[in-house]
Image 1 (tube, chains in turn blue, red):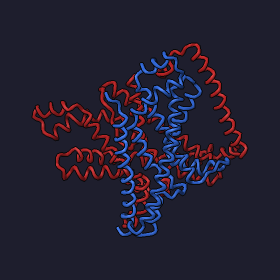
Image 2 (cartoon, each protein chain N blue to C red; image 1 turned 30 degrees about the vertical axis):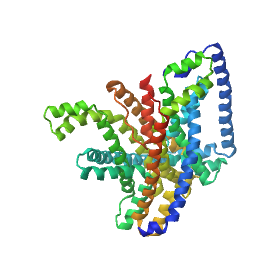
Image 3 (spheres, rainbow over the protein chains, first blue to last red; image 1 turned 120 degrees about the vertical axis):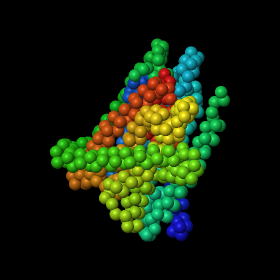
Image 4 (cartoon, one colour; image 1 turned 30 degrees about the horizontal axis):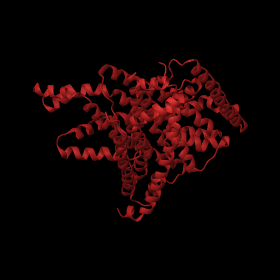
Length: 214
Length: 292
């Protein structure tokens, strides 16, 4: 127990990086995922093909494989970023595929009459999607997007393979330095729990705020 | 594949716009691919000499050996996690709080913790307490701890997704709790859960690659070893990424198909478990497919 309290600053430092990684990459994933979902429902074949290719390849590759490919493989082709920036990019790329599929299902859930009405008013495809469909789609996918967000908090731990000193990295480091592995790892687990639980509550609050009153 | 919802039957102007957008986006995508290829060949990454080791049988056999370890860890972890998960689900549904609360605590804690943290704990923590195992087992134990919690939630929502009339009818026939569970609830719920279980298998398969961190020689670790030996890490990582994609793509497809079929047949609701990302996507796809 003492080992956790004595090193509380390490935990806080790690938790701060975990939060930064999570929020930064989730922002990237939301943008990327929404654009990909839009591309996949668009009447433009090359965009649809590109969207499908991105989702099917990246989603089915283990996250740690993308990390090592990006951080240890791509520098051979002259692409190199700092560990933290690489972490944001890789987590954002990976999570973007899950956001894309979730948003796409939300788009499909919007009643067909909405798009027809928008078209009959003379709106173009981007207008129909941006003004009419997406605002309704996002409301219905708040719970699954929340699920993707909670998965992302946990996935951010994989950034330790490229040396980002987030929560799991700090806990592992501390456990190696002391002989008390159980309290050290358990402490980190509790911090993750403290991040996941409020996120779950926040998701349900947002869900109720934006839900359609039927 | 049906036409996308928003794009059916474009008018003449819409068709013209779509054509222009197709040409422009096609050119942009081609340009991006061309730049990537130029850049790679500029740095000599497309040279035959860098790819040649990956065509040698000895190298392929080495990597396939890694794949066998990956599959072994995934299957063992999955089977054991299903057994533990089933017990946890029954525990969480039990009437006695003495059984229910420990099950709830286990499920909520292990579902919120990264698998990687669990793997590091088993591999580096357990030996400090005198537990020495083969690397495979450290990985498998961590995967069981995490996935049994997720599977327990899948099992529980599968059981709860059944119409209450089923249990009520069983009770009114005079069946007891265990008889009802064994001969009415579980057989029906199991069928409902098959797609979710397959999608969780994809997650487990992907997570076995975290064994890389503790130097367990699965597919990714072996590709790193081969990449270092031949000086072609980029090519080796691309090669294993393709193997992972082939295996997981197939499994994901099976999961989505099964889910759609289940929904059509039983008109049952979604099984949703917060924080299980692959499951989220399978559910999302099935939602989209069955709503049409």
